[in-house]
Picture 1 (cartoon, chains in turn blue, green, brown, yellow):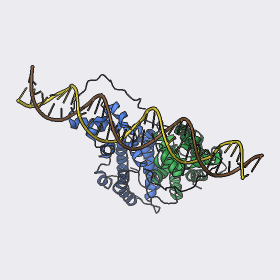
Picture 2 (cartoon, protein in one colour):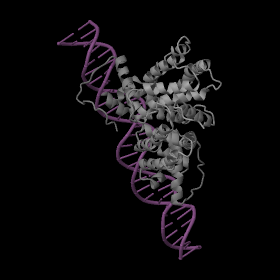
Picture 3 (spheres, helix red, strand yellow):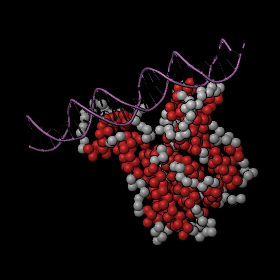
Picture 4 (cartoon, chains in turn cyan, green, brown, orange):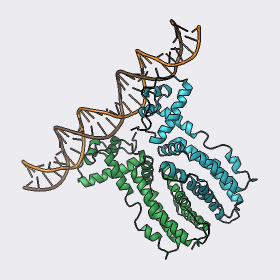
Length: 208
Length: 208
DNA sequence: ATTCTTATTGATCATATGATCTGTAAAAGA
DNA sequence: TCTTTTACAGATCATATGATCAATAAGAAT
């Protein structure tokens, strides 16, 4: 089952301060559940952490609350609250704002743990997923659409679906890399930049 | 657990011809595993089918081979073998070929069962996934890149990453709809058409 | 060194789960 | 109607799994 790194069975029992141990468990759980899915077994997780399975239940009431802690750890700070303002700052060219956002955002989300736990929890129908996506829609994409409308000089304006298409095309890079484990260029910058430029060009927005 | 449609427990035992019963099980398993994931329990599946759990093992050696049958059922005919030829048929405008392909392809893959089982199996690292994506890359996207290069009149040519971006942006519609269960327009045609046109415009390919 | 606190373990429980096997009854053939 | 075949159900097994709890020992306090 869990043939990832085995732990020295001879390692002497070590007592950690509770906060420290708890954090160690959460960190390990994030990596573990990201790899095998949320149905991963507590015994496998414990073995990987080099602790007993029963210890897990000393720090978490049950498996569900452990997974909640994993969610908290992973979802936290994933959408910086300053972006809505930065995206609406018209003293900066729209292209620069878009590039800055997706450069920042992609380094935040193109991460093995986040990508996979987000997908696992999405498939499981986790409420946190819906909230995250609604937040993304309201705080990022919707303001962005306004900015694009304001900057566009064309009669043909993009709608929300067009913007989701831009967003999805970029996010799909991370899906290819971490969900499907396909070989990808190490630097996603050029592909993202091209995608943004194609989008802006289509709506006749000056590109520098 | 399995609070989906319950089955009348009074229903009289019915004998089906083996091929028919087997197909019924596979169909039910596709729907079931698509909903709850590949770790869905055989007892839940059996209850949903209105048969006993033991009967499943009369038709499949073990759960793994049942899942293999699910894969076979779901992956079959998902990439029509005629598309490589049709995509390379230069008697038809490139835009028309692209539109026709993605119109066809999207109706094939924007389907609850396929989308979710593909994602579940992708996360599980199923070999079939890798094969599918390699097939897609070699038989569809690579030829498509050639066609675009041939039709493009610009110095700036798209590369494989750009094409994956087009593809991903389209596929992401299905992900939003079936994985994240977000509200989506019922007709994806316009969004797909716009995405393709933006792409072609960027490479100065005549659009009709 | 000794005592004390408590983080950690090991044994254990109840239930869930994949899988097996024997008996039963539905449907076909005589 | 009787016989035969075999699809199917029900009982059961072995193991896995989440969870509990009393006993232990690491490390701080004295």
